Amino acid sequence: MKRFLGRYIEQRLIELGFTDFKASYIAFLGNLEEHGITNNELAKRAGVTKQAMSKIVKLLEDDGYIYTVKSERDSRSSQIFINERGKQLMVAVYNCTEEIRDKFHRIAGYEQVEQMIDTMVLLVREIEKDTGPLTGIHCSS
Image 1 (cartoon, rainbow, N blue to C red):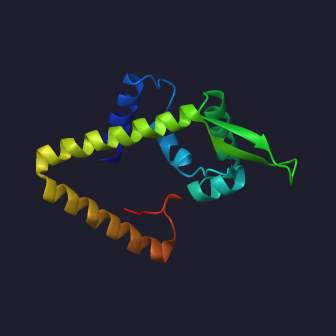
Image 2 (cartoon, rainbow, N blue to C red):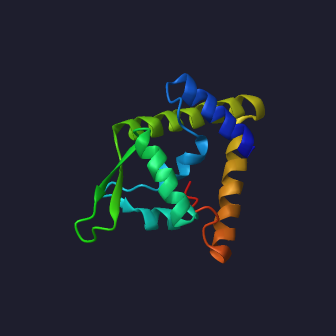
């Protein structure tokens, strides 16, 4: 399912003009905050190393989805912000997930799909109580 969703979203994003974006980056953009976030905090939330996060931040900044501003408190640190293109991408991702959900509804029926989603959310929430977030993203729906 994860592979299908990733391929579907990437293909739809390409069709929508986001040709340089990987579905795996969605989790990073989803962890950004309006007032900015540091690389270290973003890495912690996403469950990756600071070095890996620095590479992803560089890619996302080079591709125009985010921007960074040097911290006033610590010149070694920067705050990371989502820009307008990044916001447009997140809207496109949301629309793609709605397309998938509608497709699933047509295939399996509304009740079954919604029950499956509710069950998966319940399972992840309960597992996270014992283990903490598995991917740095809390289940909230």
